[in-house]
Image 1: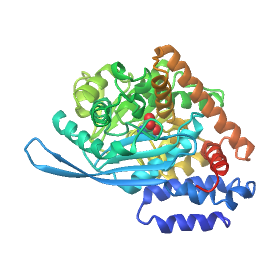
Image 2 (image 1 turned 30 degrees about the horizontal axis):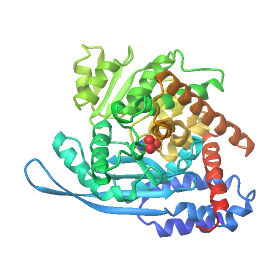
Image 3 (image 1 turned 120 degrees about the vertical axis):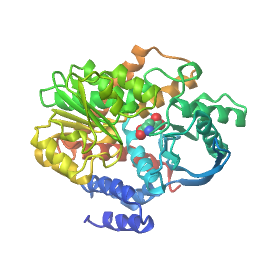
Image 4 (image 1 turned 45 degrees about the vertical axis):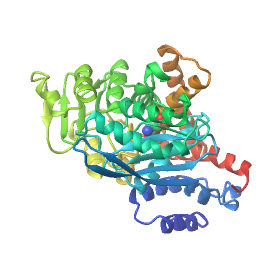
Length: 447
Ligand code: GLU
């Protein structure tokens, strides 16, 4: 598939990590991009940079026992993959979802290295989580789970070592329980050890909004390179968590109309544009199902229990739910409906087939590691504020986020053009993200 020595490295990585399809998918995409610069950097091959980069610096797997409300002992599996610390402490979220396994955490951690590098901020890459399902669990159960999880993980963390945050299933409530337990175990108010904290106890303004805001800003930037913008556009958004809700809010601020949201039970279409207060109330406060949105919208929205939001004709698509949620058939439908741009708010939501179809059709495609980097960038800003014991205003924080997102967009465009693949944001993001990490690794010697 690739030229040697890229091919040899690829085969070694595949052999060494059997049965991890999502991880293979993420690695393959990066290798395809790096094939474009093969031969330009013999020093990388000579020092086995890519082989080292694919092997996490440390992988932790641990038992998480906890007692449920009925008094029964439950056991989950916890993970933290400390992938790469060339640019800064390991940084990346924790995902609590029944689908979490080592391969999923490795794919997320691997992507995080390049994403974090692209932000231009001093953060390495890592990811973690557990196969715990917070849905349907009481606050007390979630608390006991988080406390048990942190009782093991705390010894591996630190503001200069490894700094987790949220991801699917881990929001303000979970970060609160995790931080409380870390503080108790270490007897330190080490605010910079976790990000996504509450605003009263070390959290930063705009962190909650940042991933979604950033994805919408990235989509707008892509459209601007083509003489268009989000203004007046119909936008399909999948998911209904933090990323989706704030992507919708920024789409609206930029003049677009977000018309869809979804969860695992189905999706809603609201032709007038989503009522974000209602969506927040149902999903963030009540932790309810998406169908309730249509019921409470007084006939203005409809609920669809089958298929996907990608069936709805739109100008722009923002997949903000989960990996591989947008496949080749969905991409074909979107292209037939004349979609102009796709920006990934989630991590790897488009399958490789979908990405190829967008490229063939000339659709502007922003991969997650560029388009959703706003979240982790705002986490790095939270760390900055914690380190200086400061708290910035919303306006200043949002301005920094916007600068970072437009900067990432420009880096992707320039890098793609430089390596002879103009307009290819996947290649731009992978090559630019990789080079910084690779050069730092070269500087450090064989470690
Ligand atoms: N989970 C988010 C991501 O995928 C945020 C990570 C963080 O803030 O550390 O980038």
